[in-house]
Amino acid sequence: MPNLLVRILGGGAILSLFMGVTGGNRVAAAAPDAASSFVITDYGAVAGGEALNTVAIQAAIDAAAAKGGGTVMIPAGVFQSGSIFLKSGVALYLAEGAVLKGSERITDYPWRKTRVEGHFEDWRMALVNAQEIDQLRISGPGTLNGSGKIYWQAFWQRRKENPQCTNLEVQRPRLLFIDRCHDVQIQGISLLNSGFWNLHLYRCSDVLVDGVHIDAPYAPIHAASSDGIDVDSSRDVTIRNCHIAVDDDCVALKGSKGPLADHDADSPPVENILVENCEFGHGNGVVTCGSEATVVRNVTVRNCTVTGYTVLVCLKLRPDTPQLYENLRFDGIKFSGGRGRILQALPWKQFFDLQGHAPPTCIVRNVTVQNLSGDYGSFGFLSGNQGDTIENITLENVNLNLQTPKLTVGVVKNLVFRNVVVNGQPVAAPFKS
Image (cartoon, rainbow, N blue to C red; front, side, top):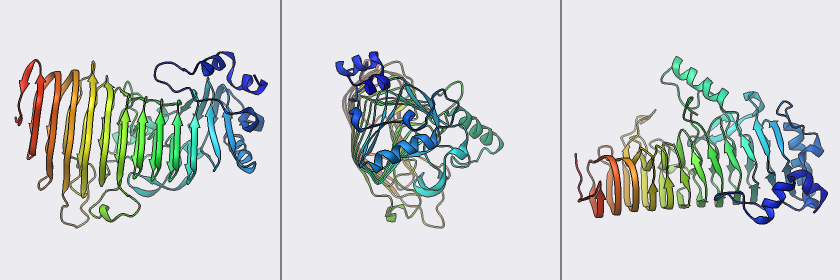
């Protein structure tokens, strides 16, 4: 065993690495070869959580890139940092016990034009950033900790001063921003206490997020805007074996917004998304289409467990944005102990602006929800804005115990129930209030 590997991982971590397990569904990503590793402590990084290590960590990244590629290693210990920027051919590995801890000073995250909430804004960069990289790899059993509390408190204080303040009014850093990358693998890491969104994928393709553990609190302080994974204008994305419990959307499928959003060349469709074998705790939605989204299609969510307060199918229908959500399938979902909703397709009017245009319309079609079981809160709502189309909605092989069994239905075409049992009683569609 190379001395370098022992120094980075420690004996116990080496044993679990070669056993191929890290507990539960977590992925044990193989440690990189020592010869191609760039350990941040060799470039001046100091553990302990007090020193700011941005320059040292970036130096390790730059050295790896200059050598034609390699893996930047974060060893056991707490290393504070501001924004770092990965480069082509450079992977990031967080060892057992490694914590890359985001600075509590917002000035340590550069102010740049970046993609956020469906447009390009002047906004703070993430803790870890990658742009236009092929074969991007981020892995290991370690943790990215966003030190989010100070940012959440600042946001809620501003919301108290101005109840109409927008999400972007208080600057907050994301944990991971992956921008226009292809062949992306993010495996095994934990994302904790992000100041804003946890993992933001923009215009990425061929993405695997595997065995990632994402947590942000909803009590005693709400982790404002703590989306788990934002799939923004991206395609061919697989999310599997993950645990997500946050105070906003668990998985959000995003694009642009506004009455001309369907002409936005920066926001191609979100398509070919697979979410499987995941556990969802608290959140706004297991999978949410919106708050900014135009075209979302070909989405499968299967073999997942829901244990917290959240919505299984959350479709936000903006009155100011032309939207198409189609070919969505939720299959094999087990509910245990939560109090959320099964369905929530409703108008979403937060900060909407028609900009002088006539109201566009939304289309939701070909949604199948099947093979549901367990105990949960309520059935939910299916209703759009005036002029919206909601059609071909099928629920089948459903056996649930619900605290509120009523499904409130607006104008829906071809709502089909097959073998739907609620609280021990067969239920037929439509299930109107």
